[in-house]
Each structure stands twice: as structure tokens, then as C-alpha cells.
Amino acid sequence: MITSARMLWTCHWSSRRIQRYLDAERGVPLSADEARRLEQHLAICEHCAALADEHRLLRRVLDNLSQRTAPAPDAVGRLHERLDRIIAEQSS
Amino acid sequence: MTDSESRAGDFKRHVEPEIEVLLRVARTLTGSWADAEDLVQETLVRAFRAIDRFDGRYPRAWLLTILRNTNANMHRRQRPDLFDGGDVPEGQRPAFGAAPPATVEDEALYGRLEAGLEATLRDLDPRFRQVVVLVDIDQLSYAEAARTLGVPVGTVMSRLHRARNRLRKALLVQPPEGSPS
Image (cartoon, rainbow over all chains, first blue to last red; front, side, top):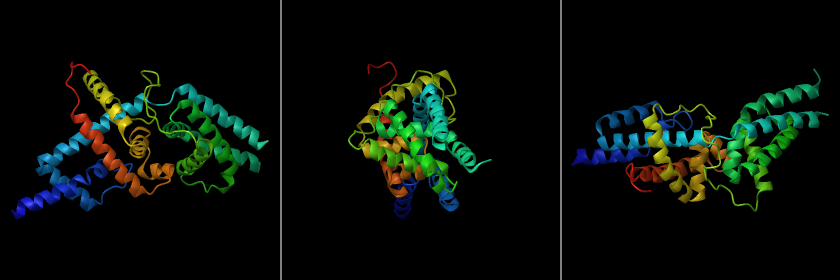
């Protein structure tokens, strides 16, 4: 009973940290201790490992969407030209 | 080199690498590419005027703050953040180096999942949608998204957590391949 309650609590703790773990480079990374504890839990808990996999899949789909919705190169080009004009106008 | 030339050179060096991300974020804030271009142009003008007060650190964060304030002035009455994801030419290359799908099968799978995901994204509360678009599509860090929206990083984290959970659940109920959409 105690073991199962502890496991449930660890699942809850882990589910609150999986996104930060996967987002380490762009967010607020977990501490080394937290990351190690989460990795240990993911290694033994199928439910939380599946949750982490779902977040990885979501991330891949959003990355794909990000590529498809990149700005048009000519719009970026116009802004680079505008930047040069602003510098020339404001400096004169 | 004169002061004016040095100032212009510094400005160009800080701003040029950020133009694409500014345009993406402006698109998220305004809901249209045309308005986004106007917003970025105005942001660049204001940033140049303020360059003397910029300490040279974190140019993206500095520019995102100017972008947010400029947007607040320019688009007060405009409804922001209408994500449609559909007005970009097919096959356009990534802005921020995200790896392309590994195989044709992956591409087909992600394409199918995307359709359902975009619908769920549109249905999200705008406060949650903006955060997930800024971080996961515009590729900002939590801190940059917080600066863009003028909210604490903790707010970004909690909104992101909830929004992604909604999106994740939506992915799990995608119809099987070949079924009518």
C-alpha cells in the first residue's frame, strides 16, 4: 500500500516535470538531481514513459508545423532592406 | 569611424540576426503577415531611436520588449493571435534549424497529425494559444515569451503546461489513416 501510494505520488511529481525536462534548452531546466530522479522514474514506470513519448511526438509535430509556417523569404528580405533604409535615414 | 557610423554598425549587428524571429512573433501577435511586417518596421524605427540606451546584452529580449510595446500602441483595437497556419507557401524551409522529418512516412504521419492539431490550437483560449505558438512554433525561450507577453515566466510555464496537455490529448484521438476527416 505504501509502495503504491509512493509510486502514485512520484507519477504526479514526474508528470509536472516532463515538459521542463524535454524543454531543457529553451526553458527553466530541472536541477541535476531532479533530472536524475525523473529519468529513474521513467525507466520503471510505463505510464510516465508513455506520457513522455506523447510529449516528444507533440514536439515533433509542432516542429513540423513551425517549419511550414516560417515567414516568406521575400518578406524577410524586405525587412532587411528596410533596416538599411532606417539606418541611412536616421543617421543622416 | 564617426559616432554615427559606429552606432549604425552596432545597431545592424544586433538587429539583423533577429529580423526573422521578430517577424514570426509579430505574426503571432497581430494575426496577419501584412500587419506583422508593418509592426516589425515600426519596431526597427523605434529600436534605432533607442539604441543609445541599449547596453548591448540580449538584443532579442530588448527587441521583443520594443515589439510588444509598439504592438500595444499600433494594434490596440485589433483582435490578435488568429493562428491559421495556412498562408505560407508549401515547401518553405525552416527558420530556426529544426530537423526535417526523417522519412516520407514520418512526413505523412506528421502532416496528418498537424491537421487535427491546428484545429485544437485554434480552439484554445487565446492566452494559452499565444504561449504555445510563441514557444513551440516561433521557438522562443520561456523568458523571451514572457517578455513578449509582459507576464512572469511562471505564467508562461503554467499556460504552456496546460496548453500542451490539451494538444497532446488531441493527438491521441486522431482518426486512423484513410478514415474520412
